[in-house]
Length: 492
Image (cartoon, rainbow, N blue to C red; front, top):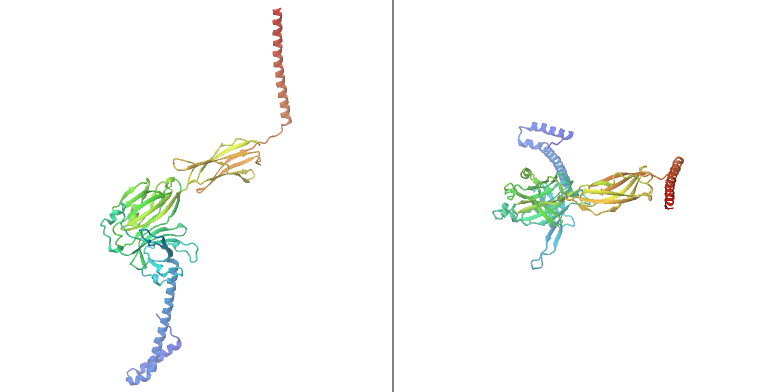
């Protein structure tokens, strides 16, 4: 740190230095006469330097504090979370209704960054419900968990007391074969479930703190960046799931287990279970489902891969990660969305005349999920479109692969509509997978009065037909009378 002296101070220092050279070598009694010049100016100079240094140091501290506050306020998430605890019952082994308290979680990477006790509590949150969460993996450092200040939308968060216990599942039981609970478990444990804005991030974390402390450390976290997934039939699907375990925890060095389970409308099934301690798949009940086994051990990639999406895959998938005595999980929703294929009958349409009624069928097939809207439109030669209504809808039918089929019938009364000389009859299908259209060309032939030539030709044809009829009639009449006369003569 350097201090800059003004010209007057420089001159005073030079004078004092020259006088000090004159008295050098004289008795101390002689030097005392120069004490005002030799000592006080130097003390004043030292004080000026210290004052400059003090001012700059204060400014530096203020700048550092401001930068720290800015950085932490912009990048360190502060989660509002509901702490849910069961109330004590009135006896008989029954528990009371759960108690919900609003809490605040200050997320930090380092346990020494800042303390929850030093944070200023909002008026609606009790100071005892403010916690510091140390997250070295930065799992919770996601933008969707830290909305701008004043935002009406906020991430979802729920915190529950967690009781570490051994898992009874076959693929997780080897993690606690010793059946000896370590002293490490004697602490305050919480399970924090969270979901970011717009479903960009979801997951849960298991935290640990010394008994009675509000300084928690993340021990196990499981997250997914694909909380909601949509896929078409036949495509490969990736359901993201990643986990992180605190390396310094005594629970993270004895192996792990991963389980994917499927749930839909109250029923469920196991998809795949993996024993990371023995590095083998313990069980699988879904053909075409697999894990990235190399990524599991290298970077905690527990994502599920479905090689070919089918309608039956629609539902909720739960990724669970086990450590000894610990469990964290995240849910991922998968929806198979396939737009319909349209077919019109009859195709092509025969020419029609005014007054004729045409029956047209629009059949939608191979779509999923079920909600479907079919409607009809007519587009004339002038390019103008008009609605023709939904027609008559039939009930849906389900195919062997889980897709649906449904039809609409249109009774087109050409006499009731101003269709001109024809146009396009369009069937429109509205579906979550997209809008589909199919069209048929309609030709109308109007009635016209016959021309003079056509009239003369028709008269001529009529005269010829009349002559033929008269000739045939005369021939039969003549032959009949002659035969009767001969028979009369014979009888006589």
